[in-house]
Image (cartoon, rainbow, N blue to C red; front, side, top):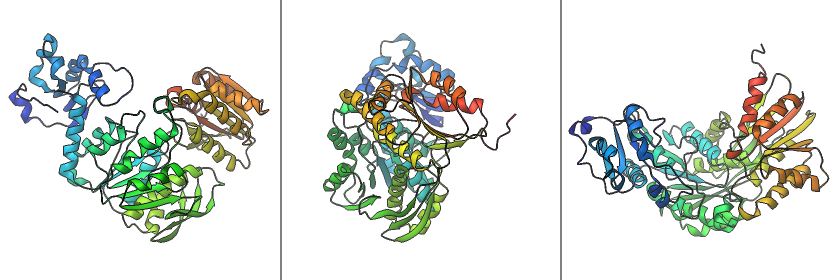
Length: 482
């Protein structure tokens, strides 16, 4: 990374780094701040224009940072930065420095890494996998939130040496690996932490704006299998043909999971009639066990089977896997179910959206609709779908209209095309809103007892505002209704 520490003052070497940060606004006392710049982002394959964080180094110091990592070419000749040189670690590229530091921590630690990718479900599968491994007694480091790119993954690894933690406190790491552009992002991530177990969840039409075709998405996702250690284990979704084509990219052990097709790890006797609960029989090469998952939808069952396949790779018996799954909860804004005292229920799946995940959740609510007076779908615009975005939104609208719902509201931009698709097949109980704020105001007036409401949209559409507005206006069942 071309580091130069000679400019640091002597007392800097006696200070203990408490944590690592790339955001001057949230930096805390004792942290090392990485000042990222446009050149760093471009080299690392990030899309878009970014603010040069060198201008915020002073702010980071005022918030308690003990030192900052900065580009040599930005500091040299800048009188303001030169004044702080005794607290700057100079490098050629700050993102490369962050990644190299994480790789060195990983190399010194030297224990197994489970890496998870997929067009949807990564965070849920990561949480379930960590739950299964912890249930068997493993001490697990996992990616926080959705930290799955060239910044989030190294920051997750550095948690091993943050806040008085040490690497010997962890036996395994479960890390998300994501991608959104054709710049070999997953290949880079595999160089930081080469996986011992690689999980491929699914390939779906997301990030088409940058990748062009679903085949390109599959090739980018396959970099995870290509990055496996030679003696590693590939875990593949038997229900996804594009995932199963990746089998030839790894000569070592492979385990498959699936619901509809024959797989090493599978589910039978599936009961999805109750919202927020799936009951099934878990079958693995190590035996069978009855299992319950406190989530909704076959897509989440698939995520649970992926986690079970990881557990099987580590020789965990099915009874232990089932016990761990029983206590799992959905991550925030990813299928959370809220029952309100006024008699309606909301499925909060507002973290993100793509055509497949949207239709999966609509089917989920339809399966669990018994006793409901109205099924309401609030579907936000789906971003980064490329040149076929209009047709993908319209197709989704047509499928939603045929699913048996009673009301469909589209939100922002191409959300109008979801409504148009539904109208094309004769479904007229639709409305379009320009923003999530408008939806929130209207839904508060329109919601009724007996409603089951799905709220979903791409992150940039902020459909979580609708959920927040409902929770501020109406108490949940069991809460103080004053």
